[in-house]
Each structure stands twice: as structure tokens, then as C-alpha cells.
Amino acid sequence: MSAERLGSILIRRNKLRPGDLSMCLAVQKAQGGGRRLGRILVEQHLSREEDVARAVAEQSGWPYYDGDWSVDQEALSALGEDFFRKRKIFPARSAVRRFFVLADTLQTGLTDELRALFGSQIFFMVAAPRALDRALQLLRPSSGGGVSPEPEGADSGDDDPVARILVEAVVAGATDIHIEPSSSSFESRLRIDGVLHFHRSWPLGEHPFFVNRVFRRAGISAGDFLRFHDARFEFEARGRVVDVRVSHLPSLNGSALVLRLLERGREAMSLEPLGYSPEHQKVLERVLRRPHGLVLITGPTGCGKTTGLHAMIGRVKDSEIKIVSVEDPVEVRASCVTQVSVDSAKGYDFPDVTRALLRHDPDIVLVGEIRDEKTAREAVRAAETGHRVFSTLHTNSATGAFLRLRDLGVDWAHLAATLNCVIAQRLVRKLCPECRKEGDIRGIPSGAEAYLLHSDRKFFVPAGCSACRGGFSGRTVVAEIFCIEEEDRFLIEQGLMSELVPRQAARAGFVSMRADACRLVREGVLSLCEAVRVLG
Image (cartoon, rainbow, N blue to C red; front, side, top):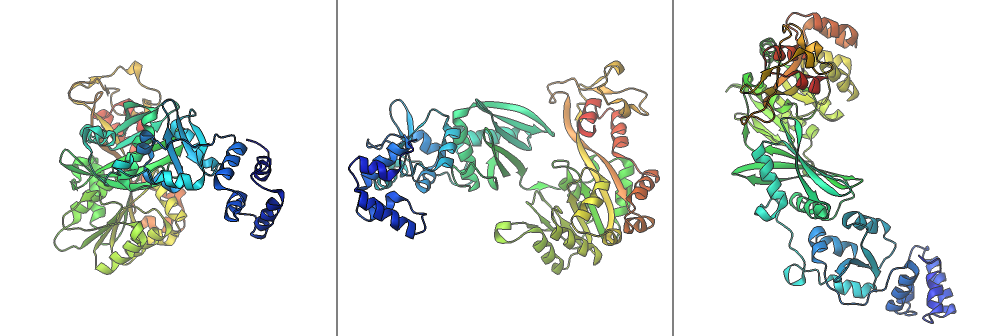
């Protein structure tokens, strides 16, 4: 880039007189100094737009473009017509190279973005603004060489890589699709039964095309790769309607995506098939009969919290009870439950909807997740006013729920008055009963000794067969339950967690998460390697 000023270049080229330059500099200063000198020169009819553009080209070190305006169809398909129109950049291509034509050479963020998308072997050229505007009119669908955006949620068949991977993921039973770019390619991985599996590797050049197909389905502006996005769309695969939740991160190597798959219309499960131990089921049956108070299920994303909530709701509902829920989104369809989906774009967020639900005369309120101070306050208020409230919280342990609610502004007194039960849980892969085999005690993984308590040192390991995936088939719950009794409420009100925890552990019927895992190892349901992977 040349250090010579634009005015000096025009004077040297005999395209501007020194006196006229002085006058335009004075106009620029009087207008606050924010307007470009070249625009002022053209507006004052002191220089031609083409001459200014050629001087800008010399100053920037980019060639001046005065060729024919052939559209680079590949770049246009990747980023979409709107991307180029809004940013005033023309995608052009000769027989040997790809280049982009701009009028403004100072859009360094945009040029960096294009290099990240298409590689460093691209070129930039300068054109006069009006010539560029006329060329951008060529970017029309079909006859103009552009492409029509896909309708949201459309299934484009085998030629659409997004549709293809969605179908393959649904058939494989995946809950999430991860799209991860590297310096030379990008990969797709599928999360199945809580574990990521390699799916496919793709050429890096196809990455912007793939991302924009997802963007179009989700209603995200084409080419908006430098911001975080959370969106969703619907997809139909093999007769099943799937809600796809899109999370986009602008990573160092380009756009990283996670597509979470939620099957619409999935029916609620009953409590027994989830895998809670007999001891845990007894505790839950007793807690669920309480006439009011707050029941929480805690754990990381994907540990079955929502499934557990709906199983509990299924256990208590009958024709004499009014149940309402607020969820984001509604993952499980439940009969005899009035379900409301959060829609932040329309102003329906968790605290507002929860507040509205309390005016709907419910007996039981299901809040999909307590994620902020307002939602926590409304959930506790509902529990204090005679309602049974079921919800979830992102914490690693049952005791962590107390601290998390305190962080969200709920004081110890309100916790003591409302909290009935905290369930902490994880999902673990079950050994395939068809191919599991007895393991050798000499080959147990590091850290697994604690899971052999009361097992006669007998355990099973995965083998793998045609009926399973690597020796595992399905998942079950490992859990621990803090059931709050009346004698515990004084300790909670005083914030004496150091006394509450050992009291819980010593209580008859209490089963810790590790002890629950030991039970599954003893029964031949859980492998030691899986226990260590999930629980440590």
C-alpha cells in the first residue's frame, strides 16, 4: 500500500488542481473529517469517479478493474446474493483466478473474512462505485447467475449435504451433529449415546457452502460467519419431524456448528424404564406425593433431565390436577398437560411465561430450566404459593444446586421453605447383553477400583457385535437424590451445608451416584471404563 495521499496521486496524474484539493480538504474538515475525500471531489465535480477509483487502486496496491463482469457462481452459491449486495462487493472469476471487486479498499475485516473462507489465493480489485453498483444488479437468481435461497426447513434431497447428514444422523440415533473445520478440511461427528463418533471428512472448500445451507434453513443472514448465532429450524427425515437447534461459533479455522436434534412429538416415558434404582424410586414416590414445593433435576446437558421431569409429571397427573409447563423448546409431548413454548423473539421468555402460568390456576408447574434470576424467583414464588414445581438446573451435583440458586438470588430462607428434592444424575451407556464378556481384574482401568465394592471383584467389559455399537446398547441413569425432610430445613435456612451433606449421606435409603454406579457394575449393566468416563 502506498503512503502517498489520494490528493497527491490525483495531482501527479493531472486529474486534480492543487487549489481544488485545498478547497475540498477545507470542506472535509468543516464536515467533521469523517467523509472520504474522493466522494467530496466527485460531488464537487472536481474529479471524475473513474479517476478517483484509479487513484485509490494505486494507493491500495490493488489493480483497477475495467473488464467484463463475469459472476463467480461458486462464490455466489456459497455466500448468497444478499451477502454481496449488502457489502457492495462483486464476486468475479477469470479462467485462472478468483477475485473480488470493491470500491472501498478499507474494509479490512471483510477482506480477512473472505480470505478465511476461500483461502489466501484470492485477489482484490478496485472499481468505480457506480460501475460496481451496476454490476451488482447482475446478481439476480437464475437468469442473472445467482441462486435462489432455499425455503426454511426444505429438504433438498440427495444433492443437499445438510439434508443428507441430517437423515444419516436421525437414522443412527444421534442427538447432536458437530461440524468442525481445521486448516485443511472440515469434519462431521455424531453424538450417539453421549459419545462423539467420527462421521465424515469434507474438503475445506465446501465449508462455506455447507454453513450457508444451514444458515438459510435457520433464517440466519448468509455469510454472517463472524458472529455467534443460536437459531432453529424443522426437518423431516424418514417421516419423522425433527426440531434442529443450531449453535454457531466463529472459531479460528472458520465456522463451527452444533446441530442438536429433538424429535417432535416424542411421547413421555414412564419412571421405571429410565433406570432409577429401587431405593431411588421409593424416595421419588414419597416426594411426588407432597402437596407443594420445588423438585429439581440437575446435571450437564444431555443427562436426561427433561425426560426425567416428564416421567415424574406422568406419575402424578390425573383428571383432577391442572398441569402447565413452559419449555424451550417443547421436546416431549404430554397428554393432559398445557404446554407453552418459549419464544424470546416474541417476548415469551421463561420468567414472563412462568408468571402468566400462575394466573392459569395450575396445581403443578413444570419450568423447563431455571437459567436466570427472574426465572428462579418466579419458580420459588410458585412453590411458596401452594404449587408443586418441577424444573432443571445446570449443576454437577445435588449440593451444587443450593449454591447455584443462591447465585441466582434465592436466599437461604426461601430455599428452606420451598425445596423438596434435588436429583443429580448422569446417563451412562449400558453393556450389550448379547456380547458382554467377563473382564480380567488385572486389566481394570485407572481409577476403577472404587466401583468394584461389593461386586466380588467380578465385572463385565464391552466386546462388540452386530446388535450393538462397540459393545454398548442404550443408556440408563445413575443418580443420587437429596430428599429434604423437615429437620433439614433449619440447617438450610442457616446456610449450614457442611452439616446437611453428612446428614443426607447417613440417612437410611440414601444412595450416592458412585454407589449407584457400583450397583450397575455388580449387575453387569455398566462397564468400569464407562463408569470412569462419566463419573471419574
